[in-house]
Image 1 (cartoon, rainbow, N blue to C red):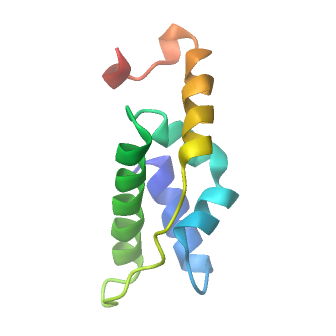
Image 2 (tube, rainbow, N blue to C red):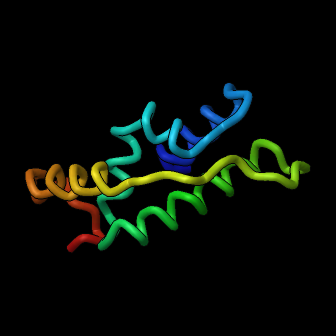
Image 3 (cartoon, rainbow, N blue to C red):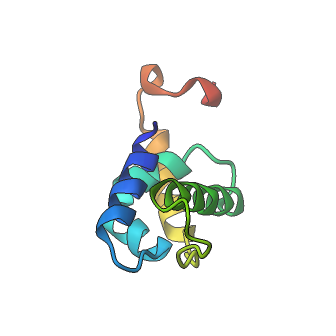
Length: 97
């Protein structure tokens, strides 16, 4: 299980009304690391929404509604891309090579 999925499940478990934007605001480092692996902000946003839905369904499998998924990742995505430029080569992930 990824660090993102663990953080999402923990957040969903302990929050009455989970919202993706609130999760992103309180878990910026985990989100930044995860979204930095995408080529553009739209793909990163779509993938993060899928992860939130999947984590929510794992925590509450019988619920039909999903949490609020509106979020703007543009600034965080730019920060993630800048941050990735300074990572040493040996810590790059295999899918970035």
